[in-house]
Image 1 (tube, rainbow, N blue to C red):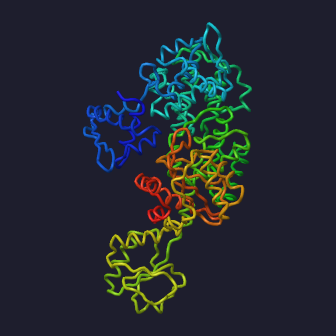
Image 2 (cartoon, one colour):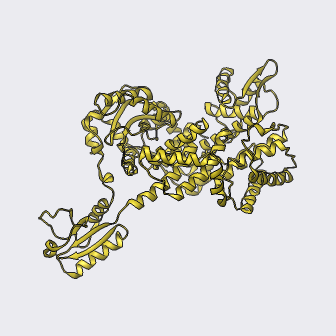
Image 3 (cartoon, rainbow, N blue to C red):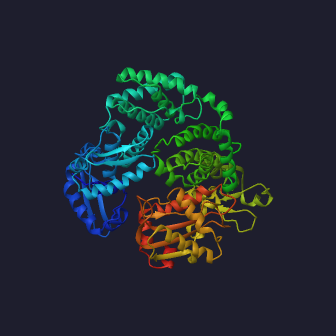
Length: 640
């Protein structure tokens, strides 16, 4: 009923809390206003049967309301799920065509003629030939070749292990893009897939081993691929070359899993296929907790964890050397992660985007940590693996924050009597029990006699004109909302209290520039900061190096590039708006850039600065208003 772009527009509007203009959507999807308006007209006509009402609010944009929840829920799966079959897939999109071609070739045991593909996809020969260039680029990463034999057709040549790995990776990619369950994938037998998962779960419980839901899904998909390939006569060659050493524990589990899968499917797994299963088990957290300390002494994991601890302390001033829980969690994660990287196995992190947006400081730390694995294996650590490491760092940062949050010592000054003083005392204790220690409650006239040497601040119901050397905060005896917000802000870190303008100066704001690529933006802003004497001469290379690790675009037309290491004496932002959006990475357009610099040395409170920045750039309305401004002064005024 809807094209892929129309579905994207519809889902975008449903997920938005405010009306959105056609111009904004056109920037996000990188198509013309006219195309978007035509799509919106079509959606308006067709949305009613889905329990939706699309309305144009003049001066604000398009807003969508769910008018019938039951009807909408019935249609939502059709809106979000796309089957990989030539009858339902939208072949107007190149990504869909490339994934379809990959799957067709990887799952076939014979040559396929180009004319057959043309008939299946209903597209021209020139279009398919162009798509095949992309297919070949992907296959090259796995040392696979797409050969064209005259009169026979096309066929993928190469190692069976790599074919399966490529197939798995791109099926995962499809799931990520289309929110599709493996169980619904038409290439797999639903009941068989479910039984394989049950076998894995049974072994997990039997051996009391640790495995996440994601790891279980990944293992099950590799096993169902193995079943399909064995059924079609494709067997893994001797895998001894891939196995770095013996894994006796994984071998026991593999034999038991394979025996039950053979009973379910009627297939016979030769020794090379059992090695294939072992290879995937060592890339999964199949490890009894009690084995943790043992294997960390025997392999390279211990030295990599030490490298990570040293790098995080040296480059971000995060000292996790005494955080036993973090070290254990990291150790448990690193070993299977290294095996996944060695064997080019895919693991998908469904929380990747959420982690990047909501825990940017932890993600930056994880990128630094990933260099230790990269240097050891000489292999690139992808974003999905980095995001898993970021989760462990995020938990450690929270523990550090709680440890560093000292309880503030306070004296209450109340002039209206014992009863009201006690009321204020108990109200503060109830609301801020773990953050405030009320040392004393005194009258104003006794303040001169009080020992204030250990007191952080005073909460008073009357003005105190004398300078007593510590902050005084005057509140209402009954603590209204304004008072409570002031106290909450007071108890937050000093970094968090800083307003946006304290990170900005007019000389570091650039408006509606004619720049057309990510690289040109980074070079432009870097050169400005070098001229102002704020950054070293090699600064641009540090920013580009960080960008190469993982794109810094976060959606909403915003990117936050920054150097790999802190190189400035202060934390500050450099803002740049563009006349037109540019493509920052494969998926996202960008028109607002905030080049971020973090002060060298003390970065324990980095998360608070990110939250301040995030509160600005994640708000679509604020971004729209910033992009509409024509002068530095207007942007500064808006951010102030």
